[in-house]
Length: 226
Image (cartoon, rainbow, N blue to C red; front, side):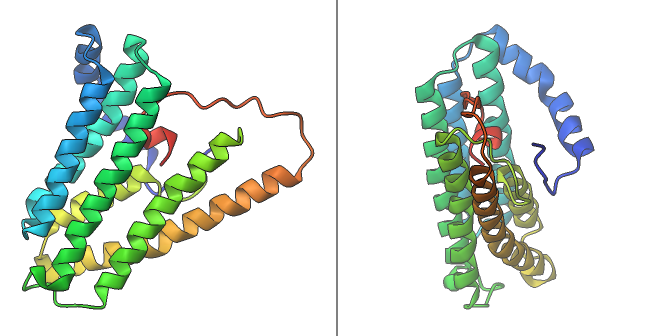
């Protein structure tokens, strides 16, 4: 099954080509993927802190940088042969924690933490976007636990990273309208994606078929449980 995403293939392939020398260098030096995962976690938590203190531009930059680490750890894990069940679990867990921290930082912006963002009703939108983001990952993880490859849905982790990063960099341009509408779209599309995955698993399990031969492999969070 091919996954449907908002990011065009040319953007994904161009990004991967651009960081391939860096990825290959890390593989040659046999940098442990868990080290990369930890660094990416700290970077993304830093993004949440930037949002909390009102530094939206830096928050956006750090979100995008954290997304680069997301790709690096999976590639290095496979390239060095150091992929492990714990590494996959560790990566997924830290990604969920960092995502919560980022949304808490965004929540503070609309809760009075930034003078240019005065829409108090947006706290509910941010909460919905956070809940939807967690459910996107949870439904994928539960499907994989059943041996079902479930990559459907538009608002997967790469899309969330890119949209939040770009919106954060634009910051308060046009009175923060870009960030506001990105969060509104995420609130709707993340929950829609979770519903799409529920329907997909329902339809898959209703069809008589031999035992699934799908086996989740340790990989980066952008591919594994987004």
